[in-house]
Image (cartoon, rainbow, N blue to C red; front, side):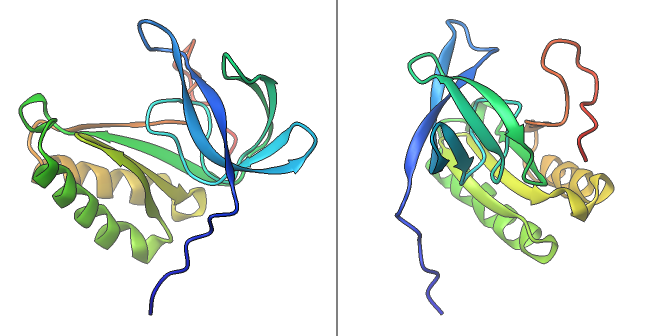
Amino acid sequence: MVERIDMDHDHVRIIVLDADPAGAEDVPARRRDGELWELLKSPLYATEVAAGDIVKVINSEHGTFELVRRGGNVCVQFYLAAEQADSAESTRRVVEFFERELKPVGGRVDNQTLGLVSCTIPAAAGFGTIENIFSGAVEVFSGAQWQYGNVYDPSSGEPIGWW
């Protein structure tokens, strides 16, 4: 069976707070109403949001937004080790690993670039399950690291607790 790809979408710019220099990432989204947008994929670089979230665009040029509603998904960003970060083959292997491991829990790979992959997992899968999958990936891909994109407050580092 061939998966149908929904091409009826646009992009919204989401600010990347911890970049130096500061920047923004274009994230696939669908307009819901006025300035409200539903994110269709989890971002590679930006934090605080995941696929399914509804955001209100405050400043489209700078990527500032207001989170209106959580979509119930966790964003996880996975970084290959520096010596593998420029390898298309290593990135492909990571994507294949996550496609296999995330499917049973309703998760998916959303975005990728050399050395970096973003994934979306339903929060209902449970943090223990998510951590087991990504800790297992670090064992397979030595030196890799991962982070939750929308679980911790970017200023304080404290859990947001939306789940």
